[in-house]
Image (tube, rainbow, N blue to C red; front, side):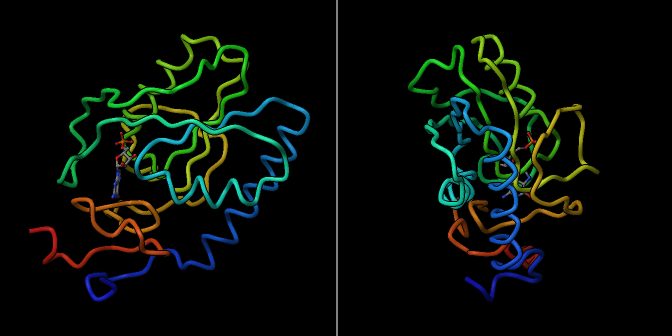
Length: 178
Ligand code: 5GP
């Protein structure tokens, strides 16, 4: 699989270091509060498990699945919930854990949807951010890395369900998109 990658954008060490920093910040910000991490499946799964391990405060987790690209590399802009949360978020401090914010449509939809459920607070932690691709203005309170406008894979991110297990974030060789 490594031979399918043309460029490593973020190494495993860079990611792990940044996850530790984010966890430290989140631990300080939410100390003494009732924190619920909402992981957006499937891409956020590696980020969630690494982040949780580094958090120094008690927290609960829950999951949501949202439709995104399917097997291609372009967002349709049409977002829907494939799997909803198991728990009520009313009165809770919710932190959404996302893999990547690209056009912003997915996050905008999630924020609108979850805010109607009356959480005590609603914030966002995204490992990757592609600011140059934004179509909808969305708040991201904790950002791992700003990255250029490239379709990336690894560390939870897939292309046609492959490459999620790579420990780094990279760019696929062009011949694999066809
Ligand atoms: P948005 O709605 O912000 O355009 O896209 C959000 C979702 O699209 C992400 O949660 C992710 O699933 C997918 N996505 C956006 N950019 C990339 C990318 O560069 N690589 C991969 N594998 N998925 C992406």
